[in-house]
Length: 167
Image: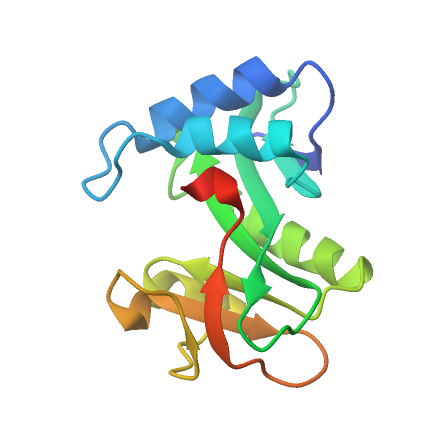
């Protein structure tokens, strides 16, 4: 297996992240094709405090994960949303996404985050400690797909609102 490293997004990575995200979600049945645009809007709005890329030995970007702030109905501060998570199609299911997620969650903790939410497959995200909590909600998708991971403090309650880039 080729060596993979993770690092923060750097100036000049934007186009590669955009192309990667478009390719990663192109054939996904639940995608509406807006993921790359969402990352661009998060960046433009200043709502992308943590953006990590996975690079191969040639420094080519082959994966990306975005973390953005969320607001919660009970005013619990310092919570973030993870996503989108993108991996180049030829390297999906090779552990790159997991590595990005683990690295990102560790960095969020170091930044003083209290927790993180994700909208996605429970079978996949349970391995990172995410769990559905009926007292923390996100209207729209099936409830079990909206999950949270508490890092510190109390478990929040209420409706979660993502950054405006998500629409």
